Image (cartoon, rainbow, N blue to C red; front, side, top):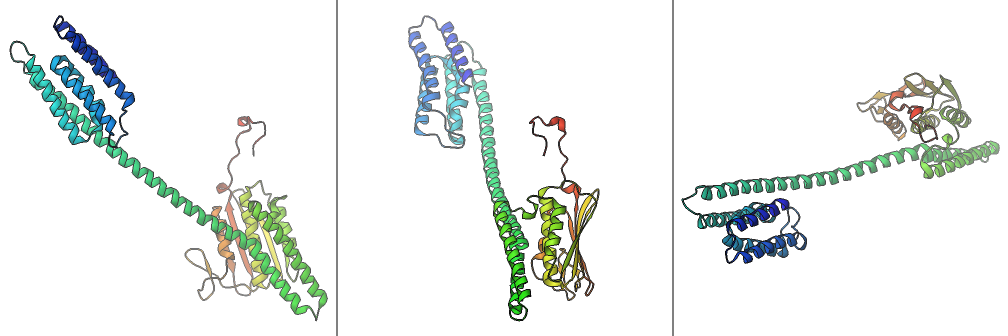
Length: 405
């Protein structure tokens, strides 16, 4: 539009010089053309247009008024300046309100028609009356359409920004809730279970302190060992929430160490490995180890068992972990959401089984509980490998020199 304005301004000046050369006020008209162009150019820097959708400031309105005043005077002297009306209309009046812009467009159109009729020579030219209003009507329609479209775009952008802000807040709340759930599960499977075992051992030591000092001291040693492991877990928990048993070993050795550690005080725990486990993501190994810890804690606290078995089965398409015991068992009734209930339909107490089920579900797997009164319990966590394994990139694509991970 700026280029079109100066092009039409130069053409209007050339036409005036061709048609009115030698007239007495030619010098003043040429000077007025120069002032008109200079004023338009300075307005681009001294009075920039306001941002879309905002009201123009006083400096911009003064510039528009000055440009229109000079143009009206120039139109009275040189009717060829009427060609500058269209770019002037789009560059200057589009920032005004629709009602003001349409009113000014009508006034400017009347001035153009009057100038054409004033300087008309010979017979009446209908184009002088029809063409300016037609061009002005098209320009006004385009201007109104652009302003309405801009308003809709602004409303759409505002709605998009508001929606993104609400979505970010929702995601933040969901992340906080998920993190709270994860932290509660981690604390239950580590510190809470350790404290529960310590409490039972210390209570047993207190009962046997006078009648069987050796057994009481054994319980005290076991409680101290559990406290040491719990402290290690707490420090590791603060560091990166990863199981301490997986710091220097993989899942199978960690489960074997867990079975050996949980054996004693009337309970024997054995570990079986079926198949060759491949490399697993840390989150999978951590979740399965936590499930084993939680299940063995339930065995020790509730089952009254003498033997328990951890079995890690590695298949081509999934990896499963079974925790079986020969304890008292219970009647299991699966509810709609997968929770367990006793024979009377009451939901099971505690946080252990729900936490294990959440861990398995987060890996895309399932957790099943099989038990009957007097026949022990089997807890099975099955995780499909397709849901947790991501194919490693081809070696040819590794340009870092450090290999793949």
